[in-house]
Image (cartoon, rainbow over all chains, first blue to last red; front, side, top):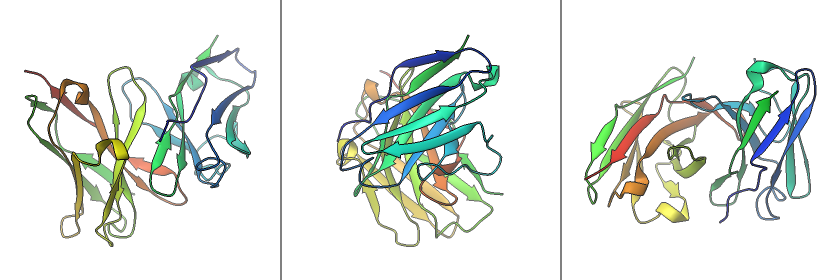
Length: 109
Length: 118
């Protein structure tokens, strides 16, 4: 199975909103509402930001939101802050495994 | 609060095997899926496989099917990942991760660096 497709990089200025896409197939993203998103700062373990497409774990800012349409899931970060600069990964459950996207580097200008 | 503590860094020769442990504290060990995810230097996350301790049967990513073994010991609340026939491309940080609710991996170990070098 191939990895999910994410843009390599996105950028935005403080206060702006950005959206990161995650494209899969009808066998993964399109077939299950089990998409999650992770934030990873350099040298750190990933942190769960969104699970089951649009749910936020306790403690995660409501500036982070998730959605899905067909085979593409999206992570939106509103009111960009400097500390949001990190790598972001999407993930989807499939019938037999878990897939990750290739990751997106977010730069806050 | 659940905490996952992994074993320390390893340096291995090509062709050998490595076994990484992940000890869980807090919460109920047996009911929650644990996965192993690796990250090569400068690269993205890669799911290797996972196990639900109460069932004891692991499932693996196709890429690692013939080289990885994931087990769980309920008596010590510890999960293990053993990777055999190591090659230089297996040099990576290996993480264990556990679910809290829903499909996301909420709890993560601190990572274990495995270096494969002759």
